[in-house]
Amino acid sequence: MRYFSFKNRIASAYILSTAILIGLIFGVLYLFVRVSVFSHLDEDLQLEVNRHSEALVVKDGVIALKNHEEWMEREHNTLGVDPVFVEFTNAQGEGIDKSPNLKTENLLLSDKHKDYEFYDSKLLNKRVRQVQLPIVDEANHLAGYLLVAVSLEGRMVVLDALSRIIWISYPLVLIALFFVARIIVGRSIRPINSIIETSNKITRDNLVSRIPLPENHDELFILSQTINDLLDRVEQVIEREKLFTSYASHEFRTPLAVLKGTLEVMIRKPRSDEEYRHKVNYCLREIDRLDLLIDQLLLLTRYESQKKTLTFKDFKLKEIVDISINRIQSEKQYSRIYTQNHIPESVTIYTDAYIFSTILDNILSNAFKYSKEEGKIDVSLKEYGDTLVLLVQDYGQGIAPQDLEHIFDDFYRANLAITSENKGFGLGLSIVKRLSLLLNIDVSIKSESQKGTIVSLTLHKSKS
Image 1 (tube, rainbow, N blue to C red):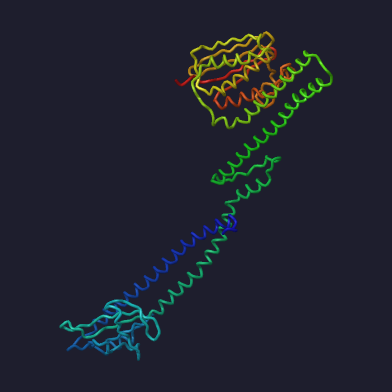
Image 2 (tube, rainbow, N blue to C red; image 1 turned 45 degrees about the horizontal axis):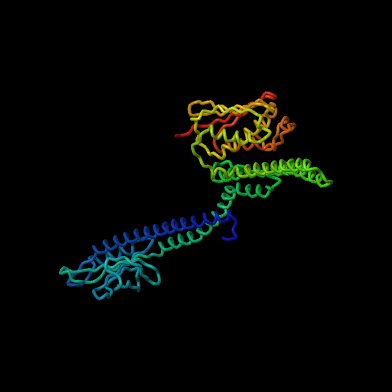
């Protein structure tokens, strides 16, 4: 069984169970026929015993036939498929009289079997079914025995033939069933062969192949569908990994090249302290950009596992927004941008503070980044029953209509963002979208070039 194919193992298991079932059926069938044959034979024997008992008479302790000549003539003229043998003995088992078909043979009185018991015996090496019953006189004293036997040869021929048919047909039926089972199982597990063939075709560079779904919606259909879903997820992960690798390597290369160029310029000749200070500060800003890129990439990488570490609590919405605004506005280049937080103090939300703060940081960072030098940012809230809509509005560069449909894509940067003096990586809104899904937040963006952008977050009030 170890080296059998899956198809042969299933067929063998099917045949094993079928062999047990068919064996039981054949055994029960044979026993039923045998019991039926012997039951009818015993009934015939009993009739013979009754018939011959009526022909007997006991006089002075001696057994005799009422009409010996008539009895002998009747025994001569009796026809049957299996001959009936009859013999009378005295109390000591010595023969008194017998049917003509016994000729020189005698039926044996058995000490091993009880009176009136049907048992198998032999006569001239032929199998017979025999019974013996005592004959008593008027005083109820034993006078002798009546022995009656019927030949078993005809019936045993039938039983032996049935036994041979069963033993010959049993393995032939199992062999035929085995090959039929292999064909049926082969068709049933055809989707498994498709899985194997498809799996052999799939490589890192070829993830488009999918397993054909079976027509029957059974376990193999579910297995094939599950594997296809798994392949879809694997393809998405690998494609995202390729995209990340491509963009990340490009984004890392740019600040590293700037750092290298700046440092090479610095060491070519002595410079003033002011020049060194300016170049070092420039290098530090590029290092900060690299650090930000690493944080964003790590955040995206941990996106799938964030679900396991979420901690939901009640938080004051205004406080979270104020912390994010103060954190970003502390940077020198954003200090002249005016912000207004119109969220009421009493509003609380049930969320994960770290993830929600990260979402706000990315949205507000973009709002500050693409606002005018002395621009304005408004943060407001609308309530619709248990639903809250948080609005972050700036009045800066805005986003062109052709860029809006790609704004949540990884590493995508709109044309205005690319030409802007503010450098970014195109990951902020991608992070916002993914983390919003974790917190069951709907995020949408409305924007118009040179007029500003409104980012809407649909939240749910605190449960308490």
